[in-house]
Amino acid sequence: MAAHFDALEHRAPEQREADLFSRLPGFLASAMRDAPGLGRWLADLDPASVTSRSAFARLPILRKPELMEMQAKEPPFGGFANPAHLTGGRVFMSPGPIWEPQGVGSDPGRSARAMFAVGIRPGDIVHNSFSYHMTPGGFIMDEGARALGCTVFAAGTGNTDMQVDAAAALKPAVYAGTPDFLKVMLDRAAETGRNLSSFRLGLVSGGALFPSLRDEYFARGVKVYQCYATAEFGVIAYESAGDGGTPNPGMIVNEDLIVEIVRPGTGDPVPEGEVGELVVTSLNPAYPLVRLGTGDLSAILPGRSPCGRTGTRLKGWMGRADQRTKVKGMFVDPRQIAEVLARHRDVVRARLVVTRDGARDAMALHVEAAPGAAPDTNAIEASLRDVTKLGGAVLLAEHGSLPNDGKVIADERDYAG
Image 1: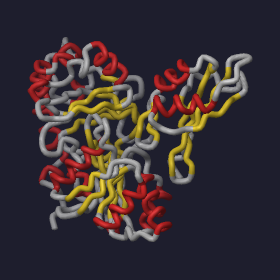
Image 2: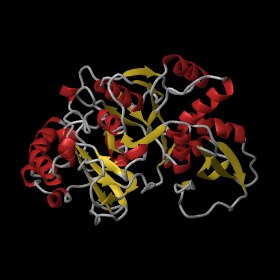
Image 3: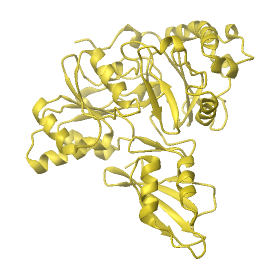
């Protein structure tokens, strides 16, 4: 059985770097011509001059609020998409909203390489419980699995009992979805006497895979690995399986991506090993995003993976450089909390606190009432669900008790547990 997806994975790092930066000037020239929004953003750039990381680091960081603003002024893509590559493809809407066109090729979300690295092979049946609704998660995994030669059950989200019944009948070897939902399925199967022992591998994303949860899955016979993916780029980095199913350290950066770790709030690269904001560039002619700040924190691990892949390794997801936070696989933005408050004038301040409830993410909106007001917490809960598409509790706080620190979202999850 082949050890690697293709020869690109084990070429010398210097060869990979030279290949990326030899292609970059031509890519920038054509992308700035064909995607007018990018051309305006990089108006003073001579693409021929960008042949090294040091030259590349002088380009501005594009951040999602800026992209959202440009898309609002010039819908839907703000001029950051090449119309010639949109025919026959898909368009997605992520929270914000941010509009994203699907990339090109049979595996536009780059997930096939990640699947191969954890042991998924042609002929496997994949139970895909990522959402196929509006956002690209379901399609990222679906198309990669089919490109690899797998059969996919397009489960989507929710309907736990139906998903358990389907898995018991189809006997999939692979689970794809958020880290938490596999436990929901396995627990429900145990309660109802369904046999889901066919699951042997899992590839998860959209949230942190806590060590305790990974250990529980391993004890139940499922080796679960994680990949780091975004709507804009698909799979950015992924784990690989080591001896005995233990994941090798770090996440390997996908091919054809340029990743940087910069000091939060700046575009300045930090030394190897230092934690900073992850910035990504993809040589994607359909959606050419250059130096997009993800808002996620990570660090580059020194050395190479024991699996033989020579790509740069990320330490993994280490939190947010801003307050935009991922809960149950969905981003929650401070702007959304502001929208909830705008619907309830009897609330003067709010703070969303994100925690863990067992193996699941949980969130609670702490609100301060206006003097003399008595807010309807049920109505606020309904607004919170409507705006964020996630359920959460609403707790009344005493007037003046919330910290005056400008923080709208507080992520209090313990990522070491």
